[in-house]
Image (tube, rainbow over all chains, first blue to last red; front, top):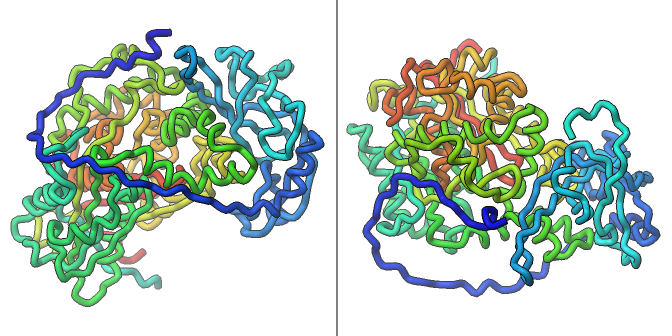
Length: 174
Length: 418
């Protein structure tokens, strides 16, 4: 694990520049209050509380947006149809992040995945179950949403995704 | 008949030296360095011959904004028309395109335009800049009730690397390549950079093993594969066809430009985009190449293009862009790196300046690509390719991972009958 934490840099041809005056300065950046419009996704948030997933569909191109969108970027119309989607999904793509635990200082490997829900045309970013081994993650891996015990009506209600048994025969690279 | 604008030519390009910390110069001095280098190549042109200026850098990276107001004298732009264009990662590309537009529009009295792109990243905090730039995307997840702290975990490696890692996994599984293929691209770039006077990471003796020995930042990207953060500036001089012939021996004609944005394509930040389910699809890039090639009359990119400069901060992107820009067939570019088609003396040399992988002054990077591509046609490039270059392309990528700029240049003007 130590090899992952040390930063070994590669040698390159360096040139020393004359150091001129450097004046330190820091801006006090004020805190911001960003505003969001969530009126278009009220039905979605309500259903999340019941541990159900819905998505909205564009009437122009029939694409299903999960999570719901206010505007379809392709047709520039408001998606106005609500459709049910399943809580099973597939890994569209993934990357492995190396997180440093603030308490123990150990580096933990966590796969961060893009989740493509069955029945939806778009993806969202999520975490996998921490028990899943990093090496077992692959593109096209079937997964299932794992709900929190108490739901509040937000995307955080899905804590992480559990692995499902892969019975697909055409997946060659695991 | 389609009425076209004036034919535009590039007569010169100039660079400042790039390094991780240019502690010897301030930002205006850095810009001045590039302009002096640009004008040095065209002895007949003085600063009084330049009619207009376009400049740009990444906003909020240096902690000081609106640089064009206090940099005017250093650019020689006093009492002259001045524009600022900034589009994030593609700033350089759009500044070059804005310079092209200024000349092609045919405004009275504006014939020669100097385009300048620069960045001094050591001065400020890049992550603060990125956080404010990326907020437009991140806000969508906040809308869904995901807190900022949780987001920090999901995107732990920071904006650009975090996203490129997803793209890399996807590309690697699509093209069936290993990390060794990625390292090979890095070695090509850094060795080429060693022969380039202004490049930043110049590593003449780098090997694939050295790159693979470095730790992961985010799988599958290792520390040795990432682009540096540089200080540097770049300038390009655009003028009309008639004036260009007096200014230099081999004027480079700009025959096609395009800047295309796809839908917001950042991973799950926003609920749409064709690149969402596949971050390496990049339909915006494909569309930009279609547009620019159509303007330039290129039907067979692989055969007609002699030199390509693509924007590739991460090695997987270099492979991906060569396919998306129509130069190689899908999933075939790793093979081209293995067989040496893209080498300096190869059939189609790529990124002989070292590319963004070796030098990345963000605002300037996307302009350095067309600038080097133009220099290769003029025969004035520092790392000149062995064969004669007639047509070359300079590509830029950025925005919120979905904006592509492309400039197609040739030593022959656009055919008028088109």
